[in-house]
Structures are given as structure tokens and as C-alpha cells.
Length: 388
Image (cartoon, rainbow, N blue to C red; front, side):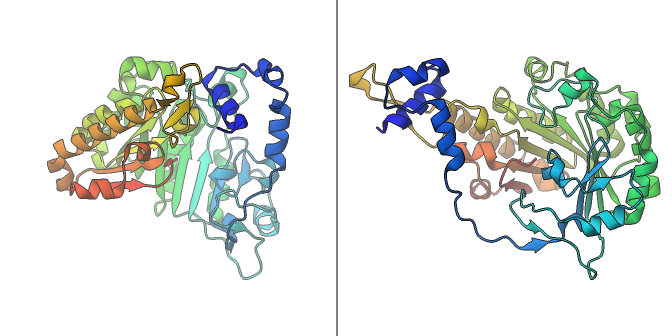
């Protein structure tokens, strides 16, 4: 096997410490050399992306009021178009001309005189303040909450002023945890009344006081409640919080507006094996949707899922040892998912609840639309990517 590849695998498995790398063999490149080779490697040629005035269609409003082209761009300060506090937002949108193809679907171009603002989707991050402490939070809300670096200002006037420019077809509201924020919650409760033709959706952990369910009744077209584990101990390990209130909150909202509730399971390295157990519970609650997204679990796993063997030189008679621990766990979980769907076939056929799985993780266990269709399971969709 190639020396460099062998070293990389040993390093990932913990058999080599970072400090030991330079002295193992004079022919093995140092970490600095590896990094330099990586950053200077020629980029692969990609097909040309179509140009689009995408910031006239999708907008992400960050918790500090910054306006960005879409949710993929929120960490990129160079892509800040302006701020909702600004008085000349239409002009800033028209003049915005920064290269961007982060989404991989299109290349942003500057608007011209023939283009008109027509927001299809606006996402508002009310604040990064959150009342739970998720270990994998992609918006770094736990850090912002602990350090106090989150928006405390009531931006309701500016949100409404921005949305009045062109009420979007879809408005997504998220945090942090909007339902645990005084200003965010108060603004959210009035959004549907102000924008009656806009589809209003809320993303929440659901780990809030049960009376919040009554406070937001009639305020949304859909609400996505995220579960980060199903067994109490698993959920606590991921979020540092108990799960009891999430079950109670979900039950209350399903009683209020069953078809508007979407129960989501976000798979992580320590909870994905519980996906089928969650699925069984969630389908029987009969919400509008049961969905499964993934937090890039594969990147947390210390192996190559598409490489079946690793080299072990310590045992010459066993030069190739199966490297399929995670594959077996994922495959067994997929088997349980299929069995669960079959067991709940009647509920799926009724059409009251639909199921959607992202394949980013479970494709390694064989989950695909083709597999689902081979079992003639209705109202089950397998989509590409993480779903997030």
C-alpha cells in the first residue's frame, strides 16, 4: 500500500500521534507538507453553473440583521448585502455584485434594470440565543449563548419593513431557539396575521414550556420539531437537556393542528441507530410529516465508509481486517427502518402522514428510493443529501 495512504489511515485511527509524524520516517511528509499539498492542489474542473440573480429570490437574515443571499452563505461576511436597519435596501440589493456559487446550483450575478425582487424564500434567524446546548450545533448557538454574543434587540419593526418590500412565498423562522426568545416569540406570533398569503414555517427544538403551544396556535403553516435522540440518555448527551418537554410540546401541537406538525429526527454519530425507534413512535402520532435529516455524521466517523478493509501490519497472517463496523450498524438500522415502515403500512396508505429520509448517512446501509419502492411503501421519499 502507498506509504502516505497507510500513514493517513493510522493517523485517523489514533495509532499515530500528530507529534510523532515528522520523526517516523524521513520519507513521510510532515503535517505542514500535507496541508501545503492539499491547499495547492489544482481544483477539479466543474461544469459551468447557470447565472442567477438569486438574492432577488432567497434571503437569509442573520441574527445581527445582516442580509445574505441564502442560508448557505450566513457565515460569509464578504457576502453581506446590507442590514435590515439600512434605509436603502432595494438599492443595495440591486448593486450587490459578489462572486458566489456556494450552493453548487447557480452563480450569483448582479441585477439589472429588468430584474424585479420576487422573494420566494426568506429565512429569519431571530437570535442565536438558545436554551439547549447541542454538541453539533452548526450555528454555534451554545457558544453565542454562553458568551452573551447574541442579538438582544427587538428587530420586529425592521423585519416587517424588509418583508414589506416583497412579502415572500415562504418565510422560515429559526434561532437559536425562537420560542425561548422574548422578542423573537412576540414578533413570530404576529407574522401570519400580517402576511396572510405567506407560508410561515418555524424550526424549533420543541424543548420549551408547554404553555408556548397555546401562545403560538394559529401562527404558522408548519412547524418542524427537531429530535436529537429518542432515548432520554441519548438526547441528554447530545443537548445537555432532558427530552420530556419535547414529547409534551409535540403532543400538544399535534392535538391543535396535526397536519401542520413535522417531526424531525436529526441523526448524529451517537443517535442514528435510534432512528427506526423514533420513526415508529412518530408515525403513530400521525403528524403531517416525519422526516430524517443528518448532521454530516459520516464526517465524524473515523473511517472511510467506502473502503472495506484497513491494513494491520501487526498480524501478518491477517493482513486485511474487515473495516465495516459502522457499515454493519448503519445497515442494521436501515433494515429496522424498512421493517418499521412495513409495520405501519396502513397509516402510510391512509396518506395522513408522509415520511421523508435524507440519504447522506443511510445510503451506506442501502437506503434508497429504489429499495423503498421495491417494498411498495407509499408516501415515503428518499432524497439526496443531508436534508439540512
